Image 1 (cartoon, rainbow, N blue to C red):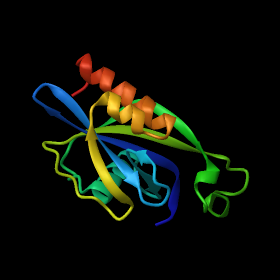
Image 2: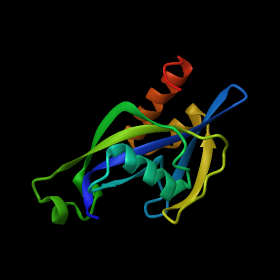
Image 3: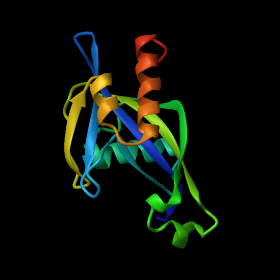
Length: 151
């Protein structure tokens, strides 16, 4: 399948003893912390892409509830070395859609794309995350969980 022109961001979290922890991942290629992220494939819905990426990168089962967040971002196409070839030189930004996924426990399976993962509270995670889009999605999710808006 061909790479679709969008990116998904998936924020895995667990609630343990009244606290919420978020799972962040350290990328092997550039050594930065981020949530699960990846590209869509032609023929998939954005939600299907998020579920597939969560499974591929963290072993998260498709049965876990995956909910869309309001956070949207655009990423510069230079982050994708294949962008010009696939989408043309006029394609300078790639849209990113964010999702939250609650896990029943802290078990994740690390893919080859990452060197490590870490469960962190909001403050720890926001300090470690590299991309602003990840920080904004985390802020949204943390506030919605705190206020009882979702899940």
